[in-house]
Length: 296
Picture 1 (cartoon, rainbow, N blue to C red):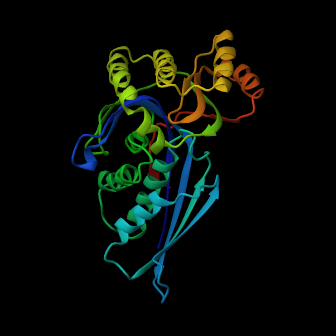
Picture 2 (cartoon, helix red, strand yellow):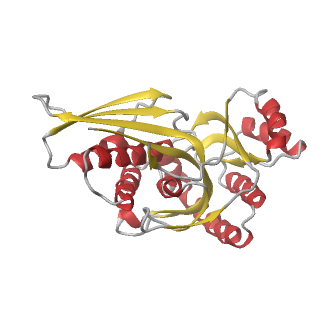
Picture 3 (tube, rainbow, N blue to C red):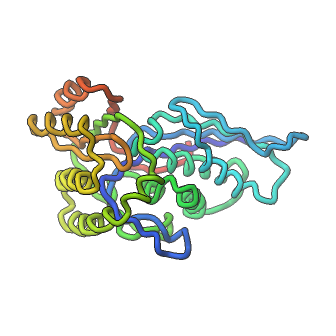
């Protein structure tokens, strides 16, 4: 039995953490962000179990990660009480890990969708996504990316929680492409611990403003303000931000990473590419993915 699923990468521009609930399915974040056409493809191959003690094997292709906790959590949830199967997992990751692109959420959600299909588990799509969301919460790798990448497109997360519990409002950005430059990774777990009170003071206010305005440029401006307020903008990022501003190009900060993004009209793409390539970072060009996580 074999199945494949894809989950888009997801960028959050600002957010408010919601961690006070007792049920981890209801934890997460309010915020705003968008999904892109790059992300994680996961292939699952299920076979009869031999005498091998292990229940699964995980292989990573593309951008590497040494942290497979979210994958292990999802696999253990699906295989609990079942010793009949051995599962081979292949994650094809075409986004860098730890740079604020929602990689752990994309790994968890693409794996959960593929496992549900390959094992014929019969879970609803929202139940499958809830397992991925719990993997993120319990492994402390993210808060709202599963909800965002589940729905795809540009979303405002108006209620925290797993898909089926949390809620989003969609905005359709007209005539926009996505340019990203990544410099260095940041640990989500470490950052949340250090910055949580700062984050929550401003993030909730910005969500309310965006629900009213539904303005993409305001989103980018507020993402920069948010990043400045919580002190994540490095000197290198500041240089890029200033040069983009001098050229009339707006940008925001992907949380959490030393990563800038710009949602730009196609006619500005070549200019921003020229600017970003001058700096020592990984430049990614993509489009918004409106479909969300899905079987391949």
